[in-house]
Image 1 (cartoon, one colour):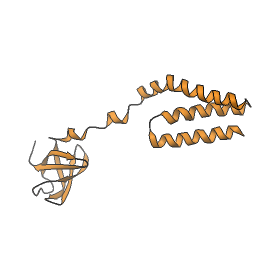
Image 2 (image 1 turned 135 degrees about the vertical axis):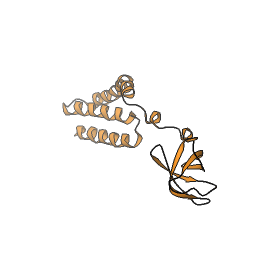
Image 3 (image 1 turned 90 degrees about the vertical axis):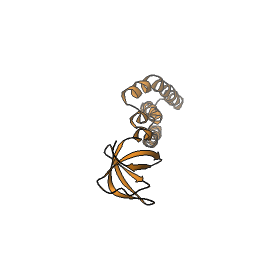
Image 4 (image 1 turned 135 degrees about the horizontal axis):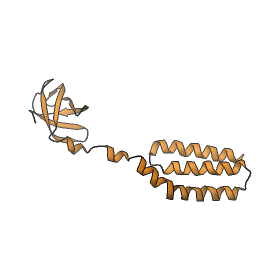
Length: 141
């Protein structure tokens, strides 16, 4: 029945991996799967623990660097919000002073605010980025 314990542990590690996205839990899941195989062939619990420990170390040392090279980090894919400064924005919802509106920059929709009325269809320039809102001014780049 120890194989079932290792299987449950492997599934839990996979579930945790879905939340973290770091591949570390996936290493432990693979190691738990290897230990499950040793439990199926009725090796002692001590050997199963050794397989889990050594397996995790070997997978971490050799396979994780290869996987990280093959799959780019999401941090590298996300542009810095400051790169939006100076970009052209198309107003898709009226921006009223004190109320805000919506703009489209590089095919992405953003909340925006301005000191002046900017109507739908007009172009604006991104002046600043405040967390998830863009400060824009009427005009063209």
